Image 1 (cartoon, one colour):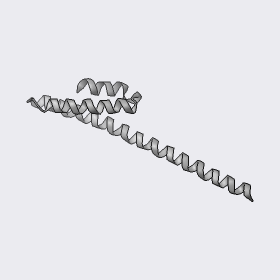
Image 2 (cartoon, helix red, strand yellow):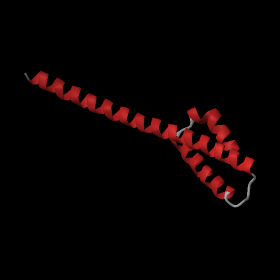
Image 3 (cartoon, one colour):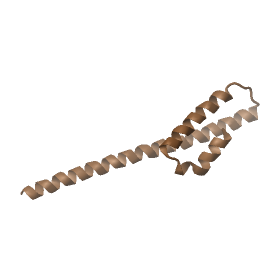
Image 4 (cartoon, one colour):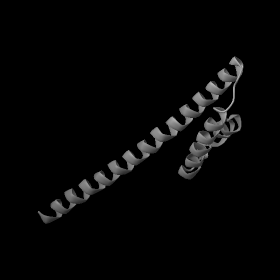
Amino acid sequence: MRVLVEDIRTNGNEYTAEQWADAEGIFEEVCDELEQYEYTQDEKTEISRLKGEYMLAIGRWKVQDKMDVVRDVIEQVSGAVKGLTGEKENEN
C-alpha cells in the first residue's frame, strides 16, 4: 500500500485514466490482502493513514475528471448556440 500511495503522491498528477483504473485494482487487492492479518495499533494507524491518502487522491482525480467532462459539454453547447445564432443572423 505504501508503494502505491507514494507513487500516486509522486506521479498521480500525470496518471492517465487507465493508470487510475490500475491503481484502483491494486488498491482493492492490497486491501483484501491486508484483511488476512492481525496488526498492532501503530500498524493499523499507518494502514488507515495510507488508505485515507489514497482515497483523497482518487477522489480528487474523479472530481477533476468529471469537471473536464462538464467543461467539454459546456464548450460543445456554447459552440452549438453560436452556430445557431450565426445561422439565424445570416438568414436575415
